[in-house]
Every structure is written in C-alpha cells, then in structure tokens.
Length: 192
Image (cartoon, rainbow, N blue to C red; front, side, top):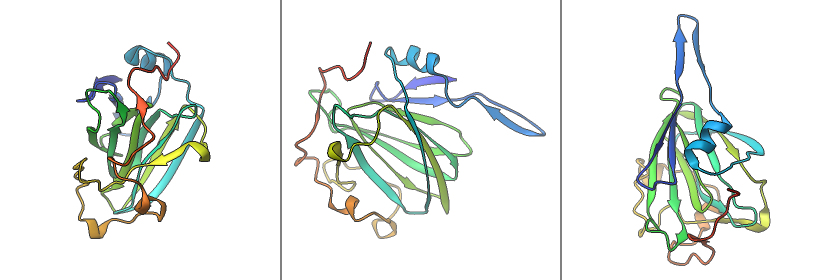
C-alpha cells in the first residue's frame, strides 16, 4: 500500500496494491502496522460501517467531539463518491480548508480522515456502497455537523444543488462561522 499525505498533511490517501488476473482481484484493504507507521501514532479501529446510497445523496459534514472524536478510514466498494474532509482544528494552518478526492470501486483508493475534521461525501454514480472504519463508538451527545453548502468553505460537490438528497438533520447544520465546537490544533487526540 502507498500512503500519500494530501494538501492537509494529516489527511492521507491510501492506494492499495491490486493483485489481479483472469479470475478477478485481491487487495489488502487495511494493515494496522503500516497505517500507524505512516501516521506516526496509534489508531485502534473499533467498528466497521457500510452504507448504500443513490446518486446525489450527500451525507455530511459530520464529526464527533472529544472524548468520542473519531478517525475514519473510508473507501468505496461499488460506484463512486466525492469524499471531503474539512479541517476544524482551531489554530491549524489549514483551519477551514478541505481535501476532496474521488473514491470509487474502480480506483480502490481510501482516505484516512483524522480526528479534528468534519467529513462528508456525495454519490456521483447511480448507486455507491461506502464502507468505513472508526476508532471510537458513536456518541449522540458528541455528534455534531457543519453545513455542507457553507459559502466560506467553497466546496465544489460536483453536482447541481437541486440534485442533492440530504437528511433533515444535514439541512440544518450550522455554518462554519457559527461553529462553536472545534478541536484544538495543539491538543493531542491520540496515544503516541
């Protein structure tokens, strides 16, 4: 696997090696020791999640506050999505900036989204099956979000707004400027 830091260096794209022949393919989708070596800290994933969505479904931008903050390792099994991670760490030189990458069943890329980032994706194909690991359990008390269409963030979701399908919850998220619950860039949210 190849681990490539993005424009925000704490976010990594992971390109697994695909072993294919006339029978199909095999890929190693996760290896803890290699991920931790690339990151420089320990990550202990505790849960796997999967969703299937139709074209235009936008899920996000979501995050959880400490002590239940989550890192995510995300990938697409079938279809394609635009995956977005927004830096919401106060004091970060990248505060308010984002990384966006197309993840698909064809390109097999994965994105590591660290704690301190809001995360979301939009489905670009007829359907997409999205799978991800998290390193902390869901906590309703710590669940937060950010408006996907915030003008300050300037995220190009690659689909016309009228084609987007959102949950009621995601249509009512606060703007970036109104975000009260952020992370501290200088605080360590991981065990070294």
